[in-house]
Length: 362
Image 1 (tube, rainbow, N blue to C red):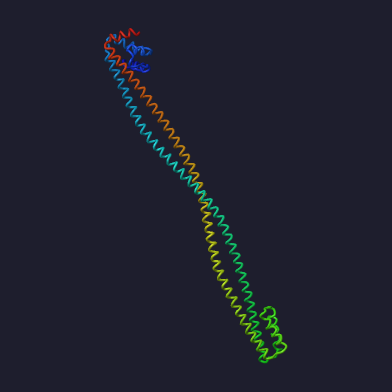
Image 2 (cartoon, helix red, strand yellow):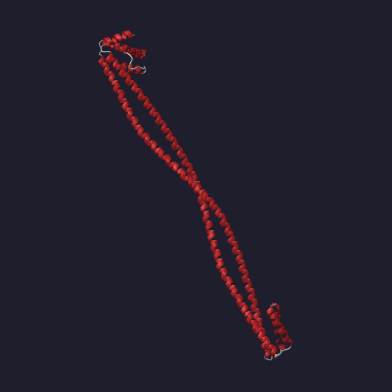
């Protein structure tokens, strides 16, 4: 029954702003201003008036002071534990924030560098595509040129074969005439050979055609010998010309084989390069898309971590403020208890002294 009034007394004194220069009368007057404090003082006065010892009240006040100190120690321990936990949470959040910031920088660099690489690859694809078209056009043009060269050789070689055959046939006819065969018997063959030689319109045959025409009108051994020599010379020239044409054809064919192989190899390289670039472009676009998505995720993670950090800091600030406020309140309460103890011990050495002050104040 005595603890409750004393607690109320302490609370009443806690609300009063006292100083160490105040007298016991002033202290009690401040306590008496509170209605509940007035009631407590009345109870204390009654207890003292009936012979209750002041020492018992001191014991209660000591218990209250001990309880306040105990509460403060518990609060200090909780505060210390909360501070350690908070610092761990803050360190983890700061580490997480640093990680997300690093990821954002890395992803931004990846996005930018890949975007640059994509632009370069797309530009190179356009160049390679143009090179492929030029290569194919060159191959088609050179192939057509080579085919024209070959066709020309085939035609000229066939002409040379026909001309050599005609020269050989003319040589046989002239040899028959030299052997005494009548021209009339060879006339048909002679006219065919003559017509074939005239069709060729080759300047090489002009002297021969003139000589054969003369031979048709007059056959003599001297003319025959001259014509046979001319035929041999012409045949030799035709064979040499044909061989030259064949050598040219073989050289052009060999050159084309090397050139076509080079063009085909270049075409293969360009096609492979284009395929590689196109595949790279696809991969670049995927990488850019993924980096943009990852960048958005990391940005959200960073915002969440920063929000969590802000919340933790606000909570810590609130807890710190609450701890400081409660510590201050306990310090004030302990001061009040000490002041009251001072009043009861040093200033009020006997119950009669307390009663006298009570009667003077009230």
